[in-house]
Amino acid sequence: MINCSSDDDSQENETPEIGKNTIFTYKGERNSNGTNYVSKIVRIDQNNGNETDIANLETGPSLHFDNFVYNKITNQILGLEGDIYETYNNINRIFKINVNDGTHSIVTLDNSGGISYNNLIIDNNNNIYAYKYSDRNGTYLPKIVRIDQNNGNETDIANFEIGLNFASLLYNEGTNQILGLESTFFGSGNSQNRLFEINLNDGNYSILNLQNSGGIFYEELIIDNNNNLYAFKGEYLLFSATNYMPRIVRIDQSNGNEIDIANFELSFYSNDTYLEDLVYNKGTKQVLGLLKSQNSLFKINVNDGTYSIVNLDNSEGIFYKELIIK
Image (cartoon, rainbow, N blue to C red; front, side, top):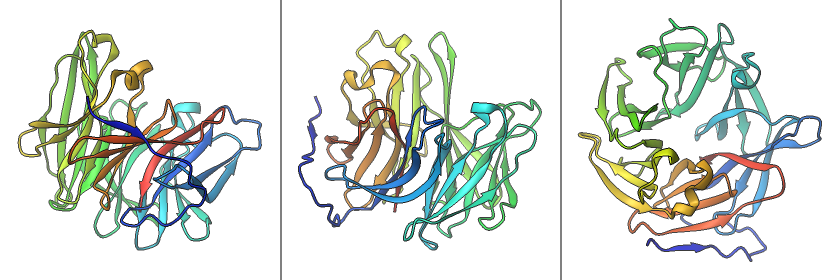
């Protein structure tokens, strides 16, 4: 069994974390319609879970952010928001949040024809990309687009097959590729799990097949200092009669072969919960992830597979979404 520990949360004062990348997250409240709750970006102390408010966003219903990236040139957190799943009215926007003073501006994206966006990606030159698709237009070709952060204008980078939906996208600075993870469940214990390697220069891509048996799925690609690729690997509960343990795996980008990095206790995987919003901390060589069912932060050592848990605010209705690393 992999060792697990709960970090001490007795420290009262938040101090700079030497050798660690700063992490932020979006903090919202469920069923906040009609209340005075203000959704916000907070900075989290990785030792004890203490929080510092960075930006207050909007009062009332929590925003529907898909994900965030950090722009080191502008010192801004960029957040992609879409509301199509809630009301079937398009609200596609990018929030640009200044980390120093908490102010934010909004760039409006394409809101026509059932268009949705997910998975913001940022490259070495601080260009941002997103996956653009339509749930309501059966002939719309999904694509990767580069987005102008000033005005929302787009440039098509790569087109894909109709119906494709990525579970996770990230940038590999070593190869100048966007890596896309597709994980689709077809029932009867069959899945389609594939890794797309997308060339930003010409839009061409290649595909690697991952394990597709036994109800297996993958979530949350992560990449480390040396461009090693990791993912969270789980199993749909309907097919978990075996003793399968959810885990972090390292994936060989040339052939799809895997090495187990860390296994987690099955109790962490009850009620369809799993680690989400994974990021890599270059300073500590840890994978950080949110277990949303418990509002806790997991810190996973990629060298030995050990992990520790930091508890976050578990007040009624509070939730966290999307880790951002600076």
